[in-house]
Length: 397
Image (cartoon, rainbow, N blue to C red; front, side):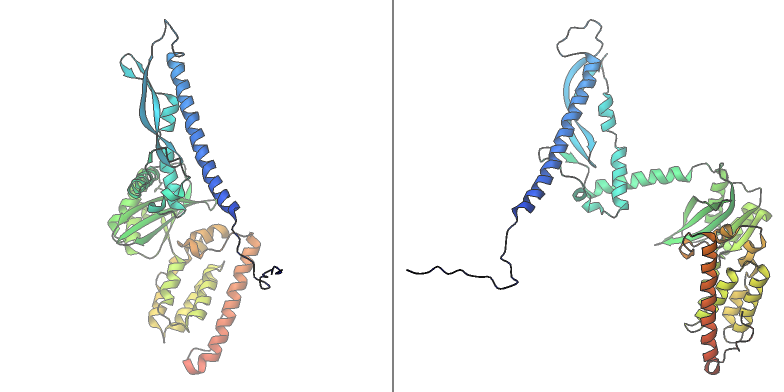
């Protein structure tokens, strides 16, 4: 008699197993969602029928004071789960006209659908994948409104309506001390953006205007729009610009002498560093940051003037860029403003601002970073002065 042999799997190798529980869970989830949709539609039908009963009375009841009558049902659409689905709507007529049902009017409102579309687009769902991001519905339910073109139309319509409402909102209630104007290039378009800053440092997006470049006409139209919406132009206001002559012209035409101009320090730093090579940029950037972060205007002016002198021989264009608009880059230092508000008003680029921290620790961090960067830059210049011809380290702050 033959003995049965048992085949053993090699150590560490598991035999393939099928896990039907996974498929079961996937199918169960889909069926549960479909059940929820079917149940929701049944509840909706019951609610609409309750509305009709409230208007017409119970079915087959003889009411002498009845003013409305039942008129069968009609195929209609309601918004459910980010799409439009077809339901049978009960009809009610009175005095020869259709009587609306409150429940149907609420469910047929397309505004929730538009909001759903905008939310999905903002989280990164493409228009062609919108339908896949929604919960499944039973195959017996007819739906529409999830195609790429339909989603795109709703997104454009909803965002356009929100943009129009924002661009016409009143500015009377804002107590602004600063106004930031800058151009943002998107393809062939240039959007002039206006950002207001209140006395407490709170920022308020005020408006934007579309054009091809930062020309004076576009800037003037934006400021005229803000003025018509309640922006005060009869009192002093700090206006932060990037050095654009068109923006400066529009600001002067609108505010006159009431505008105190602050040149954006981030834009100015970029302009200066573009004239320098990679080896000169670190030490020059350290001095610029120390000047712009200084709490004393005389110290800041001395640092900038000294930097211009050091760049004069080897990099005259960079030196001229430092001198150009020097006083306007330090306007916030000449005003009696808090340190927090000065930092908010000194730049038009939010990405360059430090994250929110307690005041004392943030000041200490800024001072430490500037000091370390300055010391490192001085050391590099000291080692390289013999071969690069840099000025001596004497006098560097």
